[in-house]
Length: 156
Image: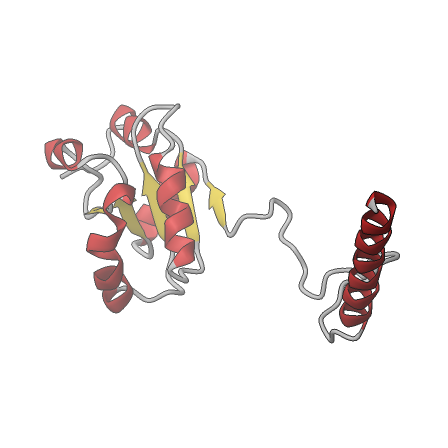
């Protein structure tokens, strides 16, 4: 009796496996089982759509007045002082500013995100979120505020 149950269970599993394999083969989006084709879209060198920039690069963009500077620090720090003309875009409050920014700022103009301290990851987090919104030229500075103040650049 037990032998018959095991035999029937194995038969059912074999039939299920054959049906699953056959249905997968006829799928138009099936993955290849051997080898891999090159990707259809070239991948960027670092795999990210946003890039880290140096203080000097940010300083040049500020002088040319062609970039929006975005302060990723908490509101209290922003209100205490920020890069002249910078907007406050806290990555933790994304839902509060995303629609407004998309409506008021062109997606092909540069945005430079910054925060304070060499270990601060808020500027990189903000840069990532800005690329999610479709902004094409997004950059971030490590310790942007610290460098800005050290070099006595214009602040508000």
